[in-house]
Image (cartoon, rainbow, N blue to C red; front, side, top):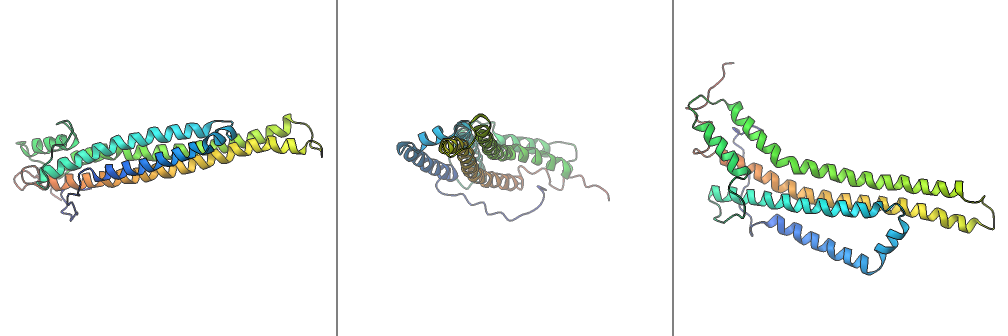
Length: 248
């Protein structure tokens, strides 16, 4: 993205502050309530008993850890967003964040570039902008990785479940009219592993993707705010007296 482009971005300050973080918190509380109902009704114990591989438990642990990582990154993105609102004069608020954040670092580098006595090229400003954009989007890329991990864990559980089913044929007695019921019960344990892990992986991956969509939306608004800050004369290094135009 070229920071010299004049683009029309709707960057009105939302109300209340940290709105996206509040939305995440509300959604996570709904998940906690659903999880409590599942545990209280005994469905969680039945799933663990049916899943011999315990991969579904691993999926839940990874999902909870990744969700808290989203919360931390979303909190930081909201802080960046509020800091930008404050710099643009749209809102006066004390942001609970260190002075040396991404927004402050970006502004410091742009101001240093604008105060440089050497002529400034457009590419130099774009390089700085792209570096900070990559830093902002890094948690979103990590979220895509974890969503993929959850799906793969579910597929691994499916394969493990089918292996358990095949072992029931190999290690068990030959099928006959007398022991066919016991053989089916043994096979159902492997089928339960395959189905429960696949179900847990798909649900967890979908919910985590929704959280990263929320994080991605907030991050894009921060990037739009950086572009607006770059357009300010006190920050922009791309004024006529600083820009060195290349001959074509």
